[in-house]
Amino acid sequence: MIFAAGLGSRLKPWTDNHPKALVPVNGKSLLQRNVEYLQYYKIDQIVVNVHHFSDQIINAVAINKGWGSKIVFSDESDEVLETGGGILKAASLLSDADIILTLNADILTDLKLDEMINFHFSNQSMLTVAVTNRPGIRKLLFNENMQLCGWRNNETEQERIVTNVSALQEWAFSGITLMKPLIFNIIERKGKFSMLDVLLDAAPNHKVSGFNHSGSSFIDVGKPGSIEKAEALFL
Image 1 (spheres, rainbow, N blue to C red):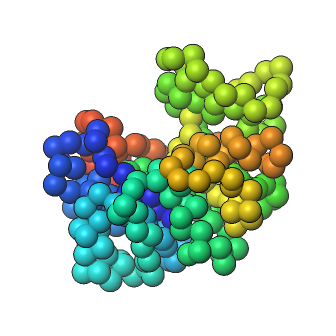
Image 2: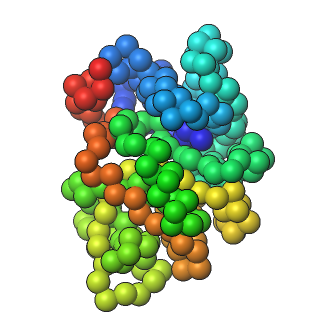
């Protein structure tokens, strides 16, 4: 599932008239780049959630015939549900899968998905999250075995610890998650909530593992000034 429903307020003025998923990077939209990225790993059954200028995304997919993938839409026209609420709304479109992968439309990376998937299955995790050691304010907190224990905002000092351990490691979340479809049986929240809520709610009773891909190229194209950097990384 590609999360493409956000307002993209950090990318104004482009997002005053367009969805952030169609921001071009060297002539290809973020959405196209992520569809092709998934195709490289033979993932071609894709759900895209839409809200902001949803007609433009739907038209782009139709005109380009899904860039060779089968793409269906989860319509959030009434309300943006964030990433957690978005995947819950799309549950009926995803529940038959052997494994579900989610990623944010405004993230570009060359993370090796085959390695992450093998890691997920070998660990027998409920969820696996991609993380790196890059700097940042908001961090996921893991124990020495890379099992999720909490979250911290180093600017506000706000934190949520769900498993108490003596030493916690900080890692930056890359917006890519693998999960078992059983996740829909344990999500108790309704309405609007984030994937972070899903991860932290699950962690006390289920295995939520961190996959370190610090050697990969990675950029959040939702940040101001990031398009030029993305064009240097992804030709």
